[in-house]
Image (cartoon, rainbow, N blue to C red; front, side):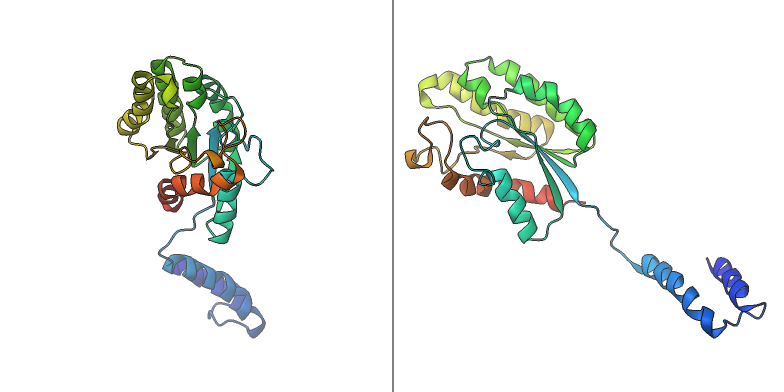
Length: 230
């Protein structure tokens, strides 16, 4: 580096290496920049991309645009000056099978740093085999990690009328996957919402806009460390 700078000085100022006044500024700018980079201990970090792969609970079903938890997340990130781009790839009615089919193209297109997988509710509501949902979630998580992304799993509980055996197995699936994959988990997306009928739309399945700040509050503590990680 010193030899390189000496040659530049000789080129601008002559063999004696004395800079001519009108050329001094020209050299000082790149030198200052080099010294700044060399003396900087924190590397520049580009804004992260967060891909949300979910169903109607993340797709603002029955809500005004901008009132769902994903939109509220974008607002919070902006308010806290946390650089992140949010890609909401959620589709109402989506199952784990559908998400697994769509994920490869989404990873290729958006190259996310974090993938939030909020799927499984529709599998459960249709009474599909828990083992199949588990296999799909595991495959999606592995594929996202293989693409260099961190994974956040978002868990769900089923209404009690689906039978305790099936509902318990379904809920336990998320914790099992979280441990196996060493991925953070939001245990229950609708914690603080599910037991309040006034926070649901007329279909009794989809939360109202008033419920979505609570949903974000459930997800935020697990998502924030991933956003701040280098």
